[in-house]
Length: 130
Image 1 (tube, rainbow, N blue to C red):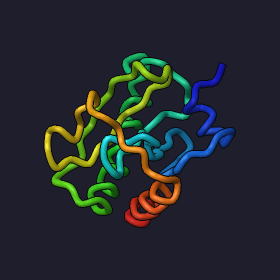
Image 2 (cartoon, one colour):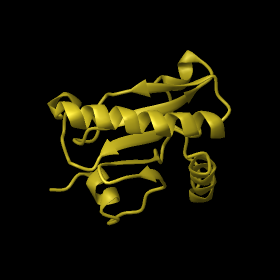
Image 3 (cartoon, helix red, strand yellow):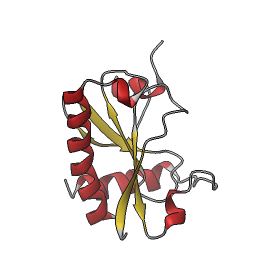
């Protein structure tokens, strides 16, 4: 059965896609920790990040770097934090979170619930910096 992320990749369900190439995709988290929180995902459905082939893992990180630089330009922050947790969706994903404090990347705090319009605006701000 396809993961939630595969369904976004295949356009079976909507997503606010920030960047995409043949192997990877980045889209906004719909319940972000802070504005600009993105997920970077390989298109190949692999549950655990360290089960990825070395070249694919390296490619994921290079792709994430490009997205992180665009996030930093688009969203006021000191830097962009990176987290890999991988328990909530069985498909490798990297969280890119704009940081102004350590608490911005605290996954136990309540998530935001932005409107679709707000997500679309944030998506366009980040895409404009790529």
